[in-house]
Image (cartoon, rainbow, N blue to C red):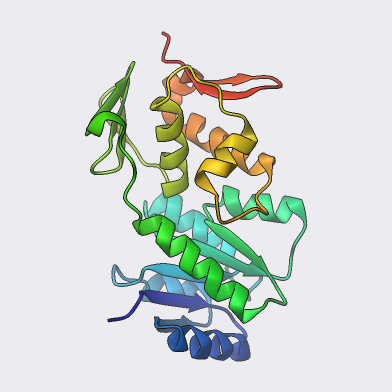
Length: 230
C-alpha cells in the first residue's frame, strides 16, 4: 500500500527525476508534468498532493494554484518548490492557496519530511468540541463532518487551512488568538511560518464570508477572535 499519489510539476527534468526517485523510495506513487498547463490536464482525484514549481515557461505555479482554488474549487494540498525565498514571495504562495513552501536548493530529506507533514495534516481527523457535527455562529454555519461552511445558507468554499482557522476561531467564540497561537495550533510542524501568513489567510476568509466578514475581529496588538454580532 502506497502512502499517497504525488504529482510533480516542474519544467526541469532532472529535478523531476530526483524527486520521483526519492519519493517512490519513501513509499509514494509519483506522476510528472513538465508544465502547469500539462498538470491541469493530467490532474485527477487519484492525486493526493502537488509539488509545484513556481517559475516555469508559460503558466506560473502561482497562477496554476489560483486556478485550482478559485475556478475549480480544488483544495488538493499544494507544496511550492521555488528558488525565490523572500518573505513577499512566500506570502504570495500562501495567498495563492499553497499549503507549504520549499526553497531551492533543497534537501531531499526536507522535502520528504514536508510532504509527510502536509499529507498528515490533510488526512488528520479534526477534534470536535462536544462532538458537534454542526457549529452555528450567527449567520455562519460550519459542518464539521463534511468540512463545509455556509454563510446565510449559501456555501462558502475555503481551502483546508482557511477552514481550520475559521473553525478554530468559531469553536472558541470570543476568545482572542494571537498570530503565534494560531501558528502553534495549526502549523505545529512548520516553525518557519510567519505571522503575516496568518493575516493573509484571515483576509481570504473574510473576503469569502462577504457580508459576514466582520464576524472575524482583529484586536490590534492582541490577535483575532470570532464574534458573530449583527
